[in-house]
Amino acid sequence: MPGLIDLHTHLTFLDNADAGNIYSNSLVSGAEAAMRGQRRMAIELQSGVTSVRDVGSHGDAPFVLKRLQASGAIPGPRVFAAGQLITQTGGHAALHAIRLGGVENPNAMVRTASGPDSWREAVRAQFAQGADLIKLASEYSQAEIDAAVDEAHSLGLPVTVDAETRYIDMAIEAGVDSIEHPLPRSDEAVARMAKRGIASVPTLVPYRIITRSSGGYYGSTSRRFELNEDTILQMGRKLRRAGVKMGIGLDLIGDWPEYMPGAYIDELNGFTQLGFSKSEALVAATKTSAEILRMGDRLGTIEVGKLADIIVVGGNPDQDFQALRQVETAFVNGRLMLKEGRLFLAGHEEKSMPEKK
Image (cartoon, rainbow, N blue to C red; front, side, top):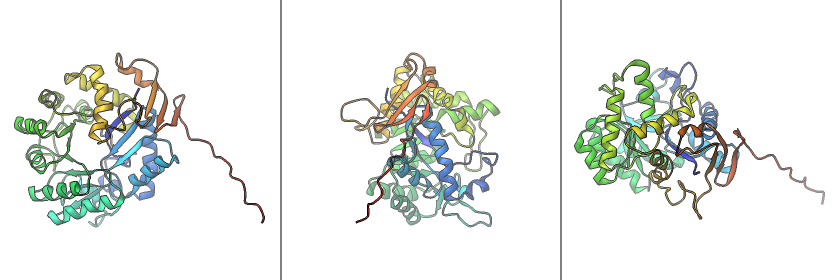
């Protein structure tokens, strides 16, 4: 079957006991971040994921991982990298950009901006490193997100946004390409998303993890609302009924990647609760997610002329998602990356020493 796609990753996010310590996450070096990213890429690949969209990681680490994977130096899914998440000064996740002492860390996973020109410059900085897309997060003014989206689109980059309520309204007005999470928004906003072709990556799993462990989501400084599992599913159903294109993304931060492949299976099961059949959920995980990546002509289905991102599983996932627990083989771009469930890296081929002339 086609390889699965995860549209919402943070490959370099802390995964140890300090995962909840914002300052620890802002102090990570680029080298450490890249090493951590390799581990997360391995988990994704062993779970059948052959493409990931990284929507906020440390400094140049996601671009390093992207290049190393593409060259065959490390096994893992292909990486579509946004670079740093961009938010306003004091916005969502802004503390991840701050070192102790209040100085912003250029290697952080978040970059803050203030004013339209600053937002444009932040977009250009990600483009200069090789970004495949731009990730924005509330909060922002209309002028700021207008500038960021205009700049990204002028550079040929799609934009996804992490936002809620009136910030979703602003994002729609600015013309973003997709919106992350099942966060609150009006029925009018849902209808406008459908009309304008703005996709949704609802990331049901992280909010299900939170609500199941604590009984609900009770907000934060930058997220001033409450959610429970019912409201999460209600929002997803509204998006589905409106005809919004929906893809699969997991947003597994901290130690949550250890829940794989169960977390991916849980997201697929969540989609069936939104009204998708099992087959339709798998299409969302492959074909539709490839379209959201703007790679629908290259990925997402097994067809002549497309890239050979293929997995072999021990069962029929269109009948039972549990078959995805048995990923036996994975090819990425025709290159064997997983063999008998284990990571596979082609062996070293000796080159001849130069002869004396």
